[in-house]
Amino acid sequence: MNVPFLDLSRAHQELRPEILAAFAATYDAGRFCLGDDVTRFEQEFAASSRAASAIGVGNGTAALHLVARALDIGPGDDVIVPAFTFIASAWTASFVGARPVFCDVDPETYTLTAESIESALTPQTKAIVVVHLFGLAADMDPILALAESRGIPVIEDCAQAHLASYKGRAVGTMGVAGTFSFYPTKNLGGVGEGGAVIGSDEALMERVKLLRVHGSNVRYQHDDVGYNYRMEGLQAGALSIKLKHLARWTERRREIAGRYRDGIQLKDTRLPQPAAWDDSVYHQFTLMHPNRDRLRHYLTEHGIGTDLIYPRALHQQPCFAEVGPAEGTLPVSEKLARECLSLPVFPELTDEEIDYVIGTINSFEG
Image: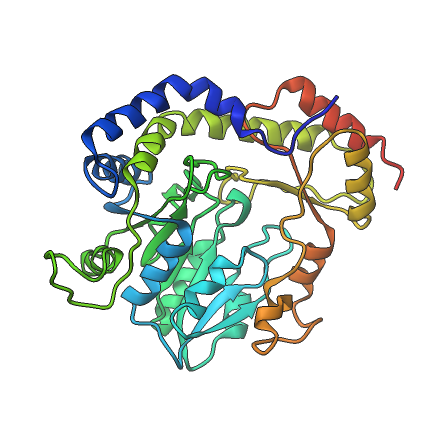
């Protein structure tokens, strides 16, 4: 049996008539950049995210950049970033000339903790980027308490956490702003690039909206140095269709994760568990194993797709060689990079495929 790590075509074929009809409506109306389709999706996504408002942008990286600009972060400032995440989280600092300060993550949740943040704070810290990694919300109450005591805004990177929550609160609504990606592989993915900023701070959201379109609210009047970060109408149309199915897809991801947890019995394997404050939405199901590379090779030989997300911590990236810290100083992130392995967890997996993955893993003799 062959089990792909991800097969977007399964969902896309199911939704093909609806998405093509949405494309046709956008095409016929000529609503290609912003427009009614984007406005409608912004309203729908804000409602699903339990946010006051949402602003559609070109991608998740643009969303982080816009929030950093809206907060006036710049040269001479420090931004706390987890060392174990996708590199775009660090661009929150780098794109505005600030310094990313990398700190370690919790070995159980793979997310930042208040303790790790506090150890990395500097007098120049201007923001904290909390990443809700692989679909699990970070432990936000202690983080928010620490940030409030120091007067430091928290930016929530929710690129992998659509519909995730923390003690009943939706991710992206607890910090100063939440950013999302709609890259095709995400839990809510478009058919190209897309992103959003959500928040309740009206002044900040208005500045994000201004910067999104060349720093202009009035045609040919530019009140700030802005960007071409608009969401496209075709993407918004597809996302509106997919958003209707997101809750169902999320429950299936959780069901698959539960089957993996109940079934995988391989010695020395650490499986992701629900946190005390909520379960994940399982953008990834990422286990740890000391013989990760051999296990991955074994699964590949048996037709099972896997991925390494992420095989190198951010402070180990060549582009941050001069930023630091030195190798060996963030042991959890480095261990995760060495031992993490992500299994197939997309909603269209069949029970037969899941059982095959479980049985193959359990037969590994490593």
